[in-house]
Image 1 (tube, one colour):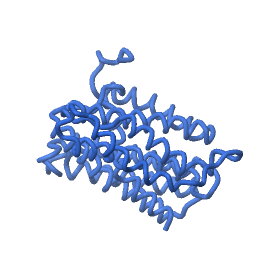
Image 2 (spheres, rainbow, N blue to C red):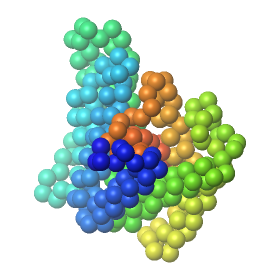
Image 3 (cartoon, rainbow, N blue to C red):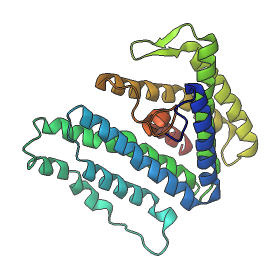
Length: 275
């Protein structure tokens, strides 16, 4: 795809990473609408990948309900920051909607394991959609849009991934979690931590909306919980016996492959920001 398939995996990773980074940075900086618009698209593409993977495992998640409920959560969390003329305050009807998957499955006679399908339907919302919604919300954590925090989170994430990748290739010997991911090493984890912490220090001088200790904490959370997030997605793919969640991003796989660490780290980052 994109004419990069003939290049080495590293070349594909670098080229796709640079192009993707430019696109993401531009969207975050330009306006709240480009920020929310692009990451909403990524959220739904990630959710589509997740449900597609589960369909390969012969499960039947209620994808339409998952998309609609995720959109509803998106609206309730972000409406105060995006819309001035129209706001919906009656969020109580969200709770009855949680019962719909059980009712819908009563009429799907071809699903032999309906409760597993219901479970993974909810899992898609909690594991994929909710972290992305929280990520978009931190762009407004001071009640007005600022690109500093979401962009800083992305910088720490990229630094962690880059440091882990190159330190692991150069120095990696001791396996971190061989049962799930044979290529991950403690040396790679250390490299990701050091580079991400260095980026956090630099961010604290230029992005001063939050204190330096919060940048250090965010960086550490992204490295530690991001690594667990990567392992969790590897566990999912290993259980389904697939290599990548998708092939949209050359050298990186799918959106779940590229942002798996952020999905697990983001709730913790959100909590640190709102302490």
